[in-house]
Length: 639
Image (cartoon, rainbow, N blue to C red; front, side, top):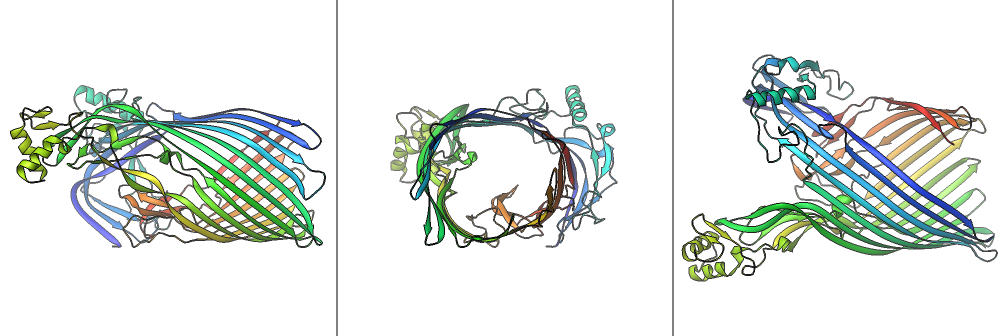
C-alpha cells in the first residue's frame, strides 16, 4: 500500500542516542634489497611486516545506543512514494520531556587485529639475443593472522525502567525538519521531526543513580558489564575468532618479442602456483550433555565457552598469456587470457561452530564456518583496440569476459558435533519402541520414565532423561556451512578517451563501462537466490590542469543502480538490498611549494548528492542519507 496506518493507543515514540568511538593503530616495517648479480641478472629481496588494529575509544565501547521513549503514540501513518517515506504520528498530548523515560540499551565492545608477514625473493634475467627478451621468476611466502573479538551488553528493557519526569532536565528539544531537504520527500510537513537530544554519559549516570536508589528498575542480565549495571561494555568476549592463513607461491614469466613480417609482436607467458593452508579457531559455546525433558524436546546443556579449531587447504595453478600486436605506429591490438583467484572473506573461513540448544528426537541443528573454502577462480578473457593519435592522448575500446567458479553459498552437512550422547537414539529408546510399537517421541519419553527409572541417566522424579556416554550414540547435527557451489559469467565493454590540449596542461579523460551477467535477482521470488553483487554500469568524466607545480582536477562520477547484497535487518537473509543510481562531483587541487612539500585541498560531493538504499521496489526505502559536501586540506612532505 502507498499509505499504511496503525491505531495502537499508548505505543512508544522512541528516541535513541548513539555514540560511536574507535581508534586505529597501524604499523609497518620492511626491508628491500636489490642486487645486480651480473649485467643480465637482477635479484630482489623484500620483507614486509605490517599490523592493523581497531579497538574501542570510549568507556561505552566502539558503538553504543541508549534509548528513551514517551508512550504517547496513538496513531501512526506511513506515506510511501518518495525516496524518503513520511512517518506521521498522532500523539495523545504534545511532546513533553516530562513524558520521556529511559528504556533499552546496547553497548558493543569490538576488537579487530590483522597482521601480515610477507617475504619475497624474485629475479629478472635479460637475454642478449633471440625471441625471448627476458624472464621473471620468484617465490613468495605470506602469513596472515586475523582476529576479531567482541561482546554485547544488551538490555531489552524497551518497556522502560525510569519514572516519568525523572530525566526531563537532561533533555534538549531539537528538530530534523531541514536535515533531508535534498532528498525527495524530505521536506514533507507531515513528518514527525521533533526529538530530544541528551548527553549519553549524563543520562547513564542519572539512570544508574536511580537504579541504586530504587527509583528505577534494574534490568538483570547474565553479564551486567564491567560496571555491574548493564549500562556499559563487558571485557569478557563472547565471540573470539582467530584465523591463520599461510600461503606459498611460485611464479615464472617469459617475455617474448619478434617481428611478424613488418609488424612488431609481443607475448608474455606466465604461470603461478599457489599453496594455502588455513587454520581457524573460535571461542564458541561448548556443550556437555543432552537432556530429554519432554516428548520432542531435548536440550543441549551448555558449559563454559571453549575454543574449537577447524582447518583447510588448497593449491592452484594460474596460467596467463598476454599478446600484443602493433598494427601501426599508433594502433595497438591486445589480447589476454588468465586464471586468477580471489580468496574467501574471513567471515566465511573463520572457525567456530554453534548449535541450537533445542534438540529433537532425531538430532539437532547449528552452523559453523568453513576454513576449507576454495577461492573464487576466474577465467578471464580481454580484447582491446587502442589508438594513440597524438602524444599523451589516446582512445581505446575493450571487451571483457569472465567465467567465475566457486562462488560461495550455503549447504547442510551432518556431523556429530561435540560428541553429545543422545538418549533418544540409544538402547533405552529402542526398548521403548519395541515395547510400545510406536515411534512417537512422547510415548517413548513416558515409557522410559515409567519403566526404566533405575537406568543410568534417568531422573523420573524430575522428568529428565540424560544421554550417557558409552551407551547412547552421539547426536547428529545438521549444520549450515558456507560452501563453494555456484558459478557465473560476466561480460562487458569499456571505452576510454584521454585528450591533452597540446602543452597547455589542460586535458580531459572519459570512461564508460557497460557490464552484464547471466544471473540476477528475481524480485518476485521469495526463495533463497544466488546473486552477483556490485555489478552496474558506470561512467567518469574528468577535466584537469597539470603543469609545472599546479594540479587541478574536476571529476564527475556516475554509477547505475546495483545489488549490494541479500539480507535486510529484522527481515532475514533472503530479501535484496539495492543501492540507487548515484552521481557525484569532486574537485581537488595541489601545489608544490618546493621539491619536498606539497599543499592540497579536496572538495568532495560538491553537488550535495544523496544516497538511497532500497529493497524489492525503489519505494521500499531501507536507508536514505544526505551527507553534504566534505572538505580536506593539508600538506604532504617527502624526504
